[in-house]
Length: 160
Image 1 (cartoon, rainbow, N blue to C red):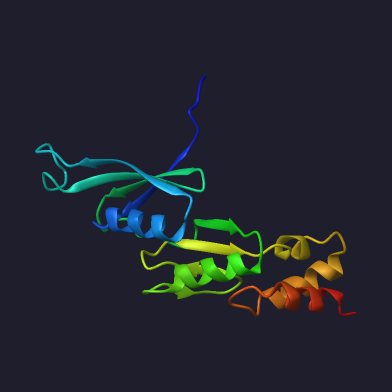
Image 2 (spheres, rainbow, N blue to C red; image 1 turned 90 degrees about the horizontal axis):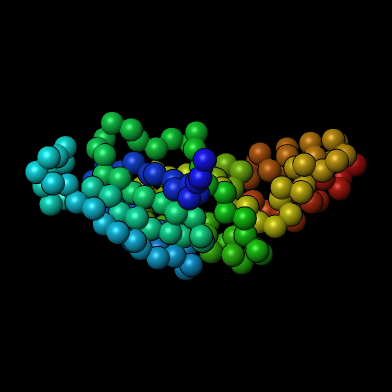
């Protein structure tokens, strides 16, 4: 069996094109693909955007204007593994502006309701430390944070 990879389909309520434009403005390594419109066959109004394809950081997405039936939840999120603190700060700010929301442990919800985990370098290493006590202390510190502070997590991990 052959595969051409995976494409993540994001179900929007009429704003898939605006969402694609937004993601392409946040993630600099992106491009827009095809736009498909509803025809007379429906189920949406003829001529309205049905799907918009886009790619960010090498990941393919399709935004589908499917309606209000299936809103986004935190059960699915995208992790952004950042190269450094500056990049983490950029994504955290970009994804929470204009109606986005902070959550706990580095999670944010963008203005379209999609959840993201902004992961600065070293954060995963601290919570998965081979020493269970260090991992527990780092995790406990992380649980008190909105935006992840790796230096604070490290201090907690190192505290005896």
